Length: 270
Image 1: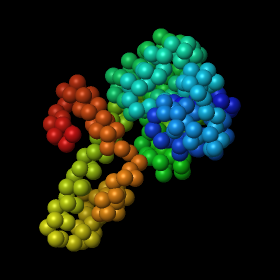
Image 2: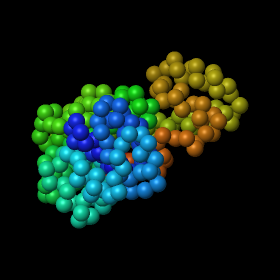
Image 3: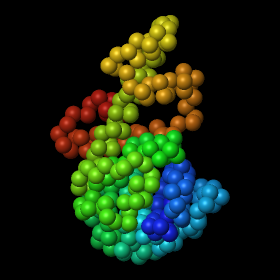
């Protein structure tokens, strides 16, 4: 999907998931938005929410100065922006905010390819948080850039989406931190669900288990946040699809192994 805020900072965003909350946040903060999605049916859902729906990615990029990428992976970004000649031709002079979760090496390669295509500024800007945080404007934004992005027209767009962005260093550093955090999501979820399953099947009281857990150093707030859904086995309304989490775990393993780290536990969980 591409969201494109055109007026204030002439900004646009490309995304592939149902990230309506991001779009609404930009609109609420006064940014006119143009949206494009690879799925036309999803694009059509965006029109009633105060944005222009582009028919093509090239149209969306052409209308904008700042491009927000929220596509599923590096391959999708490459396909949409660089493999399509019409879209590639609109890139010179643009600023790109790469908010997808991709690997550090993928991000560095993408930054180089976009620079060769004429992109003026590339900011790595993955976020921590989901739909509720996006709606409330409390997303944690991790930024990385090979130059100073804080005086660019792209920076106010990031600030509109969440908490004050944290500038972590050069391209690759924000992507690495994002993968490290998402690996924790997988690890904590697997560990907690395994423990919860044992408690239930042993006939022990889940309430007692949770009380003890909350009073210990082992507790994480996400356990209570997800507990009701785990107990009711409500897996149909997740904000973060399992396929995307598994993709991130694989990326983490690839990057960690390239740095000489052991990933046997993560590979087994995968």
